[in-house]
Image (cartoon, rainbow, N blue to C red):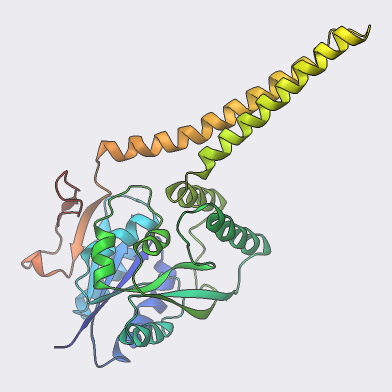
Length: 334
């Protein structure tokens, strides 16, 4: 029986680049005649003609399936929705911008056939990106590895192939603040890196400005480490130690010398330092509490507005649905 490979492609305002992405992924599928393919495009609430282009392509190619969100939910949620909708024996994650070359997927499939459950792309170089972005990305992955209780591969993104057992475990992980590459590393199984050269975007602009990058980095660190909480404890101990030393110093001046100055400056420094430590610690604690709050609300991860090309359509052009985790089953119901 021929094996099925699913390709998940999250899209957000990718009208310009889809003209290259669609034929590129078609060529990839045609280059592997020994496998069947399905390509699941997830439109993450695009405001341009992304959805219309995808629907037109799906009408011409039965391998294409399209999911359209009711609004923008974010890249990691779009990846999750695509994974939820796949049926393949292996699932490939790739962005629509073609910075991750589709031809590398052929090498991933070869590694999968050798028995590996996860084949993740490791970026050897990243063309077309600023020095600032390269430096911050490099620093982030190394900081994350130092803080995380799970070893997360350096210089990797979501570009990867995963076997069905890995996908099934990933679907059973319902956390809201998702860091997919870290979640896959946590799952385990046989994993291997596949070095490749990342190229420039074919068209369009990056959908990850500095604000989103910082939010993504915070999600990655807080999802896989409690060390920031330990850091707040360490800062508290430092503040307490300095306060004790200050007390002994003040007592020594009072008892052994005639110097006694009502130190407004020293007092303000102490108050501001301790107050800063407290606010910093409360901020860290608040981030963790906020994540707990998000989890206990049990809202659906995403809302699907339309689905095109799926077998359950019964001839209809669109299907409206809500994927909602239940208390008894952590997987999202279709």
